[in-house]
Length: 334
Ligand SMILES: Cc1cc2nc3c(=O)[nH]c(=O)nc-3n(C[C@H](O)[C@H](O)[C@H](O)COP(=O)(O)O)c2cc1C
Image 1 (cartoon, rainbow, N blue to C red):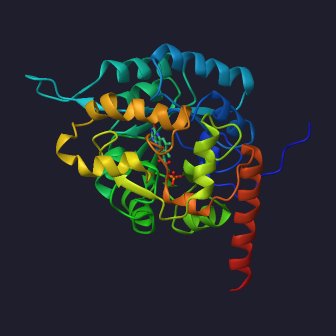
Image 2: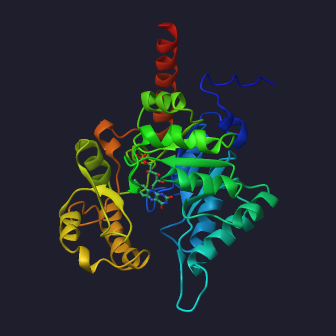
Image 3: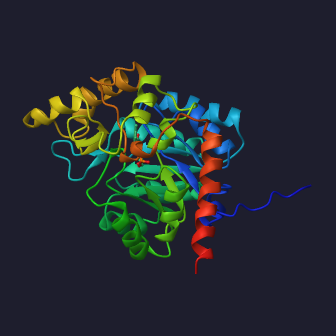
C-alpha cells in the first residue's frame, strides 16, 4: 500500500488531530454547515460544523451528513455561552448550549471547539470519550484559563477576526499566548487568508490556523451569493466591530445595519438576548436572504485580501503551496 508523503507544512497539530494540513476551518454560524466542513476535511484540513444556527437535533443531522461524505476527522463548534439566572450563585450553560454539548459528546465527534467561554468540566468528559478539545481566546488570561482547564489546543484569535472578537491584534496575541501556555499548542485565528498568513503564524509560534472569512468565499460555504460577492468586493476597511448584533463586540461588514446600531447603543441588551432578538434574524437576512445592507454579515478584515470565490480544496492546496514557498524563500536567504 502506498503511503502518502507528509506535507511540507506538517506540524504537531496534524499529528494531534489526524489531519494532513494545519488548516482548520472556523466554526461560523449559518455558514459552516456539513457541505463546507466535509469539503475541508476531505481536502486534508479540519472541517468544522457550527452549532450556533440550529437546534441540537439539526446538529446531529449535520454530523451524520459529514460522516456520510468523508471518513476524515472534523469538529463541532459550540458557543459555550453562560447566563446567570436570578438567585443563581454561578453562571450556567443555557439549555440550548447543553443540548449541543450533549449531541457532540453522544456522537463522539473527533474534535469539540469552544467558540466562546470556557468549556470547563466538559473538557474532561470529552477526553474520557476520546474527543479532542480546542478553545478560542482573545487575550492571554483566557489562554491561561483554557490551558489550566486542560484543553488540547488554544486558539488565539486576534482583533482582525470576523465575528466575536477581542481587542488585541494577532501580531501580539499569538506569540504572547504561545509563551503563556507552552507546551500546550496554539492555533492562530484572525486575518489569515492565504499562504503568507499561514507561514507568518507559524513564525509566531503557532502550529496552524483557524480561518473563517476566507472560507466564506468558497463554493461549499452555505450562504447567499451576495454575501460571498460582497466579501470579495470590500477592502480591509469594509468591516466594523459593534455590539448591536449580539451584545458582544462582533466584527461585520459595515452597512446600514451596523450604522443604525452604532446610534442605538443605549438599547443594546446583554448577550445572548441581543443575539436572540436582533442578531439571529439579521444574520438570516444577510447570510441566507442576501440583504447585505440591512443584515448582520459577520466578516473579518481579511476580506481585503480576498479576490475570488473558489472551491475549498483549491484554496487549501494553494495556501499550502504558497506557505511552503514563503518558508523556502525566507530560509534560502539566510
Ligand atoms: C460569519 C462568521 C460567523 C462566525 N460564527 C462563529 C460561531 O458560530 N462560533 C465561533 O466560535 N466563532 C464564530 N466566528 C468566528 C470564527 O470562529 C473565527 O474565529 C474567525 O472567523 C477567524 O477570523 P477570520 O474571519 O479573520 O478568519 C464567526 C466568524 C464569521 C466570519
